Amino acid sequence: MFSKFTSTDIVYTKKFSENYEDNEIIRSYDNNLQDMYMHNFTLIKNSICKDRFGKIILYELEKRKAENANFLRIEFNFAIENDFINNLPVIPQVTKYDYMYIDPHMGEYLTGNDECVLTKALSEKTLKKGIEVDILANQSAMGTEFTRKRIYRKSEVYKQINSNLDLYVCDYNGISICKCEFMLNNSIAKIENFDILKSYQRKGFGNSVIKHLLEEAIQHCVEFVYLITDSGDTAKGMYKKCGFKKAGEKTELFFDLI
Image 1 (cartoon, rainbow, N blue to C red):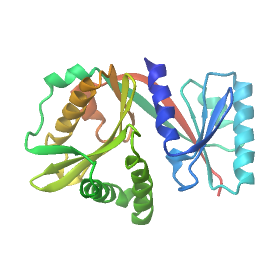
Image 2: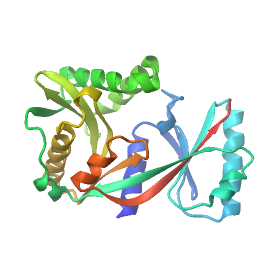
Image 3: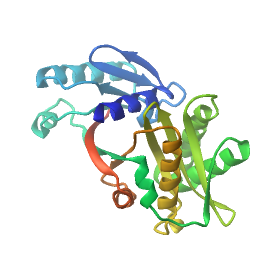
Image 4: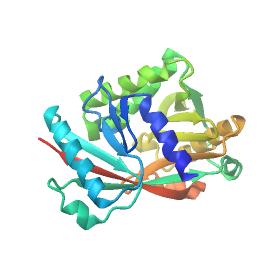
């Protein structure tokens, strides 16, 4: 099950990035938005010994420096001792993420705010609403200019025919208050970039969105729906209350090269 989630994550990333892949790594580049951390990184695919792990890190550091890059981001889904990481030539910022999953049929037990309407962004009008929500939700943390670049970059993929990655927008009393991505990948579905405007949080809208997406998943014969959270995700409690369970972890190493 966990391997299906990590494989789906690779499918998701490749929608935004060009990739180099060998037996050990996948190196992703988004040439349209080179300062987008989540689209520009190296994934170490499988568990390896510490010696080999360290050599890959050193090689990727030198490569990124030669490219005059401002950062190197490494992802992996296995355990490496903290002492080893803290003794690397450049000490990274370490972030842990949880893969959380749910059986779509659990949506039958969810209740939310029935006054909201969730719509797939198939029209320019709905897509524009979703873009506006994304900017409002993220500009204080990311900066307005970057937030705009980020969502317009993502919109290029939303517009692609048969991309299997869709943006959904939630309206309440004629106001767009929430948006999220939903990607189908065979028997797995991924929820990503789930944002509810602050003044509308903790009012049942998140539950309603999750319930609708789980119903959508059932229609497409999806076995599990998953998402990824970190310790700072304010919605993590909501996911747990909805019935999401932890399937595994992902570790991110972020090296500041400035």
